[in-house]
Amino acid sequence: MLGWELPPHNSGGLGVASYNICRSLKKRNIDIEFVLPYISNYDFDFMNVIPAIPQSGIEFMMSGSSYDSFKYIDENNHEVWVDFSDQEKLYEVAVLKIIQTKKYDIVHAHDWITFRTALRVKERKNIPVVLHVHSVESDRSGGNQPNPLHFEIESLAFRLADSIVAVSNHTKNKIIHDYNIPENKIAVIHNSINPEDFTININEANTYTYLNQLKNQGYKIVTNIGRMTIQKGLTNLLYAAKEVIYYNPKTFFLIVGNGEQFLELITLAANLGIGDKVLFTDFQRGKNLRDAFAVGDLFVMPSISEPFGLTALESIGYGVPALISKQSGVAEVINNFLKVDFWDIKEMVNQISSTLRYDVLKTELYNNAYREFNNLSWDHTAEKLDNLYQYHTRTNIL
Image 1 (spheres, one colour):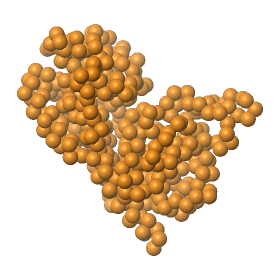
Image 2 (cartoon, one colour; image 1 turned 90 degrees about the horizontal axis):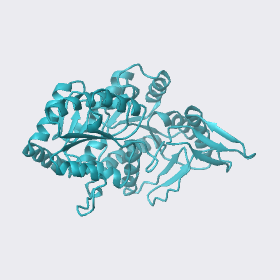
Image 3 (cartoon, rainbow, N blue to C red; image 1 turned 120 degrees about the vertical axis):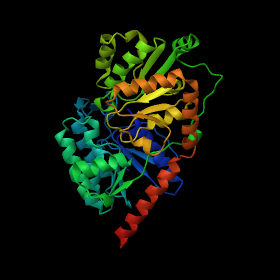
Image 4 (cartoon, rainbow, N blue to C red; image 1 turned 90 degrees about the vertical axis):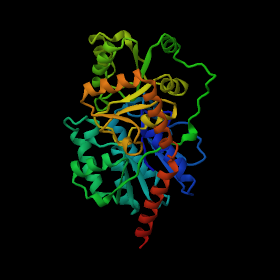
């Protein structure tokens, strides 16, 4: 399995999905070597994690996330910085060394960053390749001009792959539309959640003391958690927030995450005159992240194009109903989300305001969503992937 991140070095849902998929695949007696582009002290009992860095024992350090530049110290103690593109090339070279003396039945690659390497493994080992698509370039660009290199990589890889796994029908339709790939080559296998992973200690104080104090004074809290990129539609959420606050001044917005729009969004909130009603926390994990979900009255995910949207499921796990854009794949597994077109700011305002105003609506919405949520499991995802593996390995033998 080829991937670019695992918790706690993840920037979003890709690492979370990869981790949970592997954990459930192990229950089906599948042995996994997961190859990452960095070194970390992972000690999982369900897979072997291998760093794909130059195999010469030199010192290595990430500058930030695994999507940023990397620093190497060579044998002569010289410091060498490698950008993201060159790190992809180093990853490919290292993976080809790793596989030289080993036997594999299948290669499973997550998202465009690892697709070229997966095709090289297929070429060298003559084994089937499954490409797992968590997003396509038109998602990441928010419907704007795509990065031509990323688009070309996806286009070529989709044609050469043995199978493509899309995390939703939303994503499958984009692959067909954007790349003209035959429908029967794409399997829809939704991301999921394990309800038992969500526990809240009601006796433990919430990290966001200030927000709890506001709630005691009658305030309602609207939350958003995710990457601050054009894909996520957060500018529309802030325009909606201005109207919601105008009609109900006792509303506060909690925005959790980081990304290239971080400063832009802070500036926009100030320019809209709602800077005192919006809290930007930067990236959070652990208890701070869990508490950010739990402190809210409504979770809003206004994505322009969301291949799946794990955070909407997590909001249900932490006791909060959700409003999502109709352009989100997660709507295919939970019916009882409020839904709005990402561009319809007026309707977004109506739905946020109504949920905050009427407790009975909020409670009914959550209870119905939780009944659906409680039937989900990553084991269902793993079963479908296992069936796909078995099909390709049998076909490859024949």
